[in-house]
Amino acid sequence: RWQAVEVTAWLDISTPMYKIVKCTAGFSALHPSSHENMELLLWLSDNQRAKFKRWVQDGFNQLYHGDGRQTDELRTVITMVPPQLRRFKLNIKTTVELVDVEIGDDDDDADGDTSQSVIVELTFSNISWTQGKPSRMLHR
Image (cartoon, rainbow, N blue to C red; front, side, top):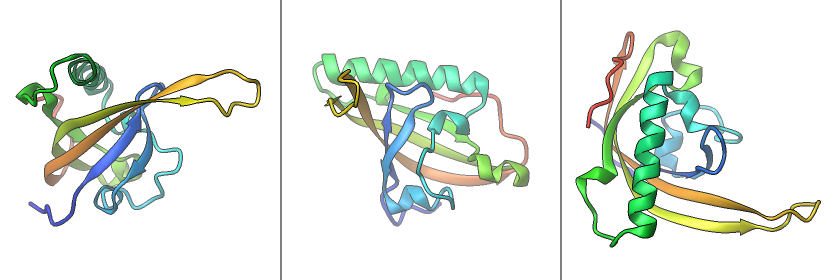
């Protein structure tokens, strides 16, 4: 297990596939290509994607509308397969924690429409790499 640096990504969950808007160097090490136009949900299987979206939505509601206490519900274990690593059958198993939520107004649209970005901060820990077909299970 390697945890020398912080592994964090900020996702815009108002986008269909959770666009990564910013990440630390530690997260960048998980994917050799640029994080430009990268979307985290593309790293998950269809089954895991639905569960992950529900977990993020529940965590968002707890952080944004709740009492601010940290609970185990803000942590889950997922298996990710970055698209550029699929051909090598490399999987990344990691514990993900939803750390923070920020809602911002994007009012610089050319047509005058205003849209809200919903940014969640996720940290990744207990990272391990495996080779082979990923497990279909999402552990809690």
